[in-house]
Image (tube, rainbow, N blue to C red; front, side, top):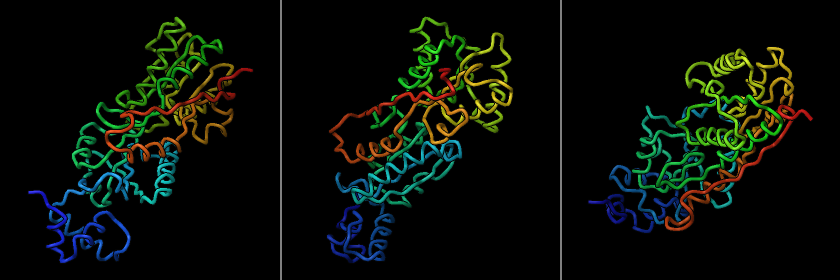
Length: 327
C-alpha cells in the first residue's frame, strides 16, 4: 500500500499540514523538523513524485561523469549557470550531481531530495530509464531520446553551416574529427557535415572522417588523428571538428607541424567556448547560447506535462574567424 502524508504524520507526531510543508520544502519549519520528517518519509518509502506539479522547489542538475572533464567544462559550466539563474529567479534550489553508470545513481539523487531532474549531455539509455522510474519530472539537455522531454541545440544545422562555409571558401578535401556517434549531439553534427557535402555534390571520403577514441589521452588522440590525416595524399585542405576543444588541439598541432592556418588548412570548431575567440589565430566556431540552453531546460521542467512541445530546438549560428577565413 502506498505511503501517504497522513501515515507520515501519524509516525512522526506532526500535523498533516506540517508534514506537507516539510515534504514540499516550504518555509515556516526549522531545519531539524524538516529533516526528521523527510528522513521518516524516506524510511517509510514515501513516493516524493506525488508532489503536485507547480510545487517544484528543488531541481537536481545531473551531469554524466564522462562530461566532468577539463575539455567538457567550458560547455557545460555555462549551461549550469543558465539553469541556476533561472532557478534563482523562481525561488528554486538547484543542486549539481555528477553521476555514472557504475555508481549508486538513485541513492545520489535521493540524497539531494529533488522534485525534478535536469539531465545534461549523454546518458546511457538504461541510466535514463532508471531515473525516469523515480517518477520525477525530467528533461534531457543536449540529448534526445524518443518519448522524453528534451531541449537541444540545432546540431545538424551547425554541422551543415560549418561545412558549407568551408566549401564556399573553396575547400575541396574537407576532413572531420568526430567523437562517439552514439551521442545524439555528435551524430547530428556529423549528419550536418554529410548533408553539406551532398548538396555541394562532393563525394564524402570515409578516409577523411576520423572518430577519436573515447579512451586514452585526448590530446594524444587528436595529434595522432591529425598526423594520419596530414599523411594522406592529397592532404586535406580543411578540417571540421565536432567541438572546440578538439579543434583547438588540432590547430596547435598543425601549427607545430609548420602548417599555416588557414592558408594550408582551414579549421572550424563547434560550441564557441570562450577559448575559441582568444586562440591564435581565432577559431571559427558554431555558436550555442549555452546559458539559454540551461534556462530553457528549467522552463521545460516547470511546464505542465500535457503542455508545450516534447522536444525543443535552440537555434545556432556560425561565427567566422581567422582560422577558416583567408580574407
